[in-house]
Image 1 (cartoon, rainbow, N blue to C red):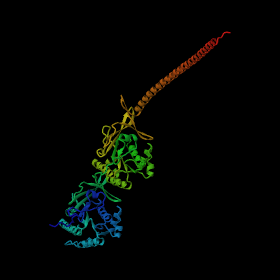
Image 2 (image 1 turned 120 degrees about the vertical axis):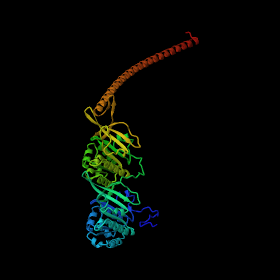
Image 3 (image 1 turned 90 degrees about the vertical axis):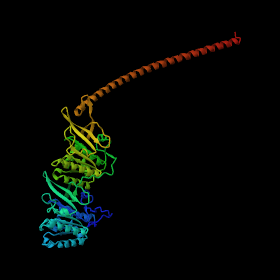
Image 4 (image 1 turned 90 degrees about the horizontal axis):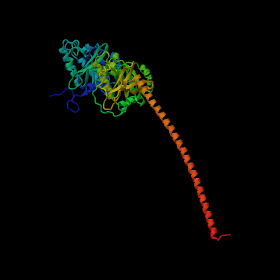
Amino acid sequence: MTVGPWPLSESGTGVLEKAATGIEGFDDITFGGLPRARATIVTGAAGSGKSMFGVEFLAQGARAYGEPGVLLSFEETADELVANAASIGVDLRAMADEGTLVVDSAAGDLDDLVQSGAFDLEGLLLRLAAAIDAVGARRVVLDTVETLFSTLPDETTVRREFARLLRWLKERDLTVVVTAERGQQGRLTRHGIEEYVSDCVVVLDHRVEDEVATRRMRVAKYRGSPHGTNEFPFLISGRGLVVMPLHHDELTEVSEERVSLGIPELDTMVGGGVFRGSTIMISGSAGTGKTSIAACAADAACRRGEKALFLSFEEPSGQVVRNMRSIGLDLQHWIDKGLLVVQHMRPAITGLEAHLASLHMILDEHPAEVVVLDAVASLSRGVASYASASAVARDIAMLRLRGATTVLTALAGTHDDPHTDVSASSLVDAWLLVRNVENDGERNRLLMTIKNRGSFHSNQVREFLLTDDGPRLVDVFVGPDGVLTGSAREQQEARDASTEDARRRDQERRRASIERRREEVEAQIATLRRQLEDELADFADVDDSAADEAADRAAERADSAARRVGGGGP
């Protein structure tokens, strides 16, 4: 049995070799790229990006993998190809001058390339062979190939000749991309048969839903290889094609380091800060201060000397900076120092694909340790719920793989339903809920921790204040009438303070009275001590006088006795 014409892998196991396309995200969903030395059909309606796929496949092959290529178009001229490729940042003319690419156009030359009657492709094959030999090509793109077969009488002939063309290319060990127009009535291509003679089929789609244009890509067929079978959003940008697969890569490193969210009391509530690289969602109804908390996290990152990215899906960037000044956060200072980027994005207008690709490119230009996605509920406007949930999941997966600490703010439902429209609660590591409560004719804010994976977190409800010096958390007052917040809390605190002040004044009065009594007692003791000392002194004087008198009397008796002994008498 002969195995061929495709090559075995270097290990000789028969595992299919692949040619990396270099298209961002595409090699992920195909587990390595397109089948090497085989043919791939890229099909789609007009404007779906088929030609740009082929151009980038060739450009990346020459630039990143050292594989020269040939681009042969059957509809557009060489000048048109050069101009179109420039829109995705590819300079075909420069590559041709470097000798890494041949750009050829057969538009208008089909009669010279194909002989009618028996339909001889010899002219086309000679032209391709010359171009391949000129640069030592390893990759070939045939753009809009069905134009070549448009004059054939039946599909059987088309299939036979197309198979012949692909066989000729495979024999030369070339990796081939063929672009074709989407067919009618569910057919992948115009003739409905090309997909049966190719090894890989990629379907591109450019659809309009709710007045928003979106692009999707699907690998409909891939012989000999596993591949992602879902539809994946992609974008054609000034940097080329970007495919956004939903990553399932497992994190190889999980940080034990904790980082501050910029509010000391909140850090205490979540066990000393959140884990670096984790995802935190702050949900709540309108006006609860979600954006302010997120801005504090970005400000704290900049204070640590880290880069931060603040993406607002609702407010213009200048408005975010202005509003944060009202609570004492000077974001402009960090912007001027190059540590913070605040950018406004409107995914409801640009589409989810553009949002995903833009986030990708912004992070490439400004790799941030902390990323804020403010008002992610905007992603759900005008699109199906599964589409917005998928976009949020892709955002979280991409940021997690980059090691960024991510803070999401999301609009929550009613007071009894804290869940958000983007269904992200199961994807995040920590969930903070901010609520408005109305008591005694005023509205106040409460903050609580719903969950915090892998860490202690407080089960207490705290009152959340926005002050001129930044957000603060204060203990709520729990009394006989329940939880008191706002003015009721302040009034109760005032009553408590008044009671404490009265108690303190009473203690001061008692202390002063005792002090006076102590002084009086000490004065009495001093007086008694002086009296005692005087009495002791008097007693000592009397004692001394008595002793002197006794001594005198003794002296007199001694003298009298001496006189008698001396025979005294006159």
